[in-house]
Amino acid sequence: MTSQPDPNGQNAEEPGGTASHPPGATTNPEELLAVLVGHGLIDKEEAQQLKGPLYEKQTTDAGQLVRTLVKLDGITKNQARRIYRDLASLLEQKIPGYILSEKLGSGAGGAVYRAQQVSMNREVAIKILHGRLAKNPDYLKRFVKEAHVAARCSHNNIVQAIDVGSAGGAHFFVMELIKGKTISDFLKGSKPVFGEKEATEIILQIARALEHAAHRGLVHRDIKPSNIMLTAEGIAKLADLGLAREATDLETIEKERGLTIGTPFYIAPEQIKGKDDIDSRADIYSLGATFYHMITGRPPFEGANVHEVIEKHLREPLAPPDHLNPKLSSGVGEVVEIMMAKDRKGRYQTPEDLVIDLECLLNNEAPKLARKRIKALDLGSLSEGESYSEGGDSGELPGWVIPTVATLGGLLVLSLFANLVLALR
Ligand SMILES: Nc1ncnc2c1ncn2[C@@H]1O[C@H](COP(=O)(O)OP(=O)(O)OP(=O)(O)O)[C@@H](O)[C@H]1O
Ligand SMILES: [Mg+2]
Image 1 (tube, rainbow, N blue to C red):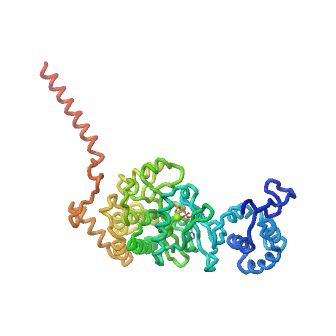
Image 2: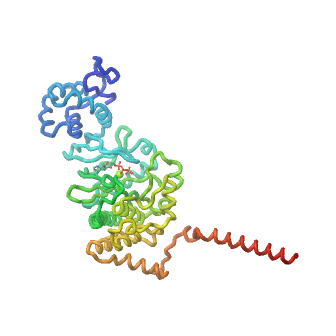
Image 3: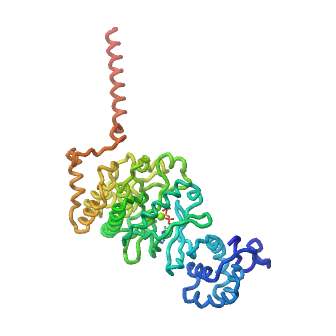
């Protein structure tokens, strides 16, 4: 496909015109019909019936095929016009072995399409990377490497990675197609839409997915509501596992402010600091932030801009979710508190530990590991002799120290001055 198909054999620039379709736009009947099925304009049965007459035309000219469809009453002229733009871009994206149809959505990393995997005769989802990423050789190396690790994962709560590759300058990641909605689709309003039990069941499924991934050495690094999909049967699926991330340290955020990354509502403090030894504990923090949003109706930290939000992740104490939503149990509040400890040594250390406490919540029991950790913190003692503060953090003075020292210093100078005046008298 080298130019845009014109469904009515008219150039887009000539709305009522009679000019013929620009030459060079090619497709085949199957590809075209898949696009129409993807758009819900015809069903699979109708596509099957239209295939024969389209092949009879013995043409690969996209415009001519679309005109034939209109003549056959497969689609109306208006429908043809409506899909005009999408059709053009979809047919331009050629990936051998796959027939792309409707666009499902897009994010910071690329655009996701529904597609037919021809060899397996099944529907899949394909993410095509944004050009910006495709131009970065370091990123591309990691992209392929992580996809290969992800292919070794097989779990009911993980969107299966199927294929990775490049074609015609486009880099793509093929995955299992999930028929459902993302958690972020449910969180559009400001009220909690998930009850405690329902949210806990979803978070537990994702914790199990993280357990499976962690055993294979994979860290997700971008757990957030739009990367968790929910099927009609209530199965939660973790998306984009094995999709390499861009760096998200402060410098990158600064450089790309307002450009590519969304507001980092769910990012772990150590990722903000650009630590290079990110592990599952970062995923546990982000899953905690997602849990928080689901049960309170708002992300844990909000702000007027990206910087305000990341500052709060780093320094502001978390408002307990059960204070925001009085319907919540104190147990769920404790679990979220431990998941979102600013210092990763204070969090659940593995997804397995998190699973134990989430199961407690679902059995109406107190979360035993969270209780133990909170008690240890209250007593000022440290479990297993470990320090809860990490390199860099421990050297920092609490916010109240500097103003207090400054005030006391000021008072001392004043009193010295007063004494001097009195002595001179
Ligand atoms: N495997 C899939 N099956 C079905 N739909 C999917 C699949 N993966 C993604 N989608 C859809 O595509 C949309 C865009 O996904 P995408 O991953 O590009 O964006 P995002 O998750 O919002 O941001 P990011 O790029 O940071 O991951 C999702 O919101 C979802 O609706
Ligand atoms: Mg995503």
